[in-house]
Length: 88
Image (tube, rainbow, N blue to C red):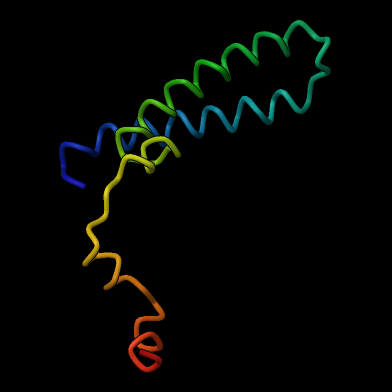
């Protein structure tokens, strides 16, 4: 991460905190309450903003699928490489 990423990262964390607060408030309501509908709409907006920021950091499943890892990096990150070398 660079300094320029700090604002986006902070925003992502704030949206997540807002989303968690909304979910907690929704748990205290009945799904038939009018307040539940408003909270649900606000949670959808917070989720959209959180996912948008998270995707900038490669934190969504679809973004992780786009990440390419070179074969040499894969070999180096293999925790069993010592065993592989011993067994041939």
